[in-house]
Image (cartoon, rainbow, N blue to C red):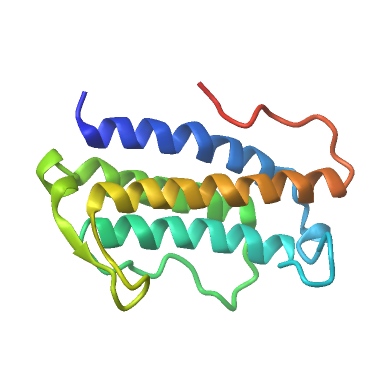
Length: 151
């Protein structure tokens, strides 16, 4: 198994759960916040989707192309599918050698990292915010929730 296949599978084991949670967020709940200082549900989901895509694009040494108009009235489930598909495409392009390359993220994170570590960071970020999304969805009244990871 190539490293990119491993990362794709690991990413999807979490992202498919994220997408399942996103499907539970109705348009009426896009502005839902569990606390006054929290991001809205829509902001959280868009942050998760775009951040992962930006991280994986950086790991592939390509600028992220705009996938949606930030000012448009978006459907979060459709957006989740789009960003998932595009992120997977990029991961699949990465060779083992690509994943060993050092990527300069000093302007963003103040560090240079191997592309593989950027993917790890991106997945860790996804997992963290997926936990937040579980709290949001529970606060919206949903009780039939998925396991935290899909095999």
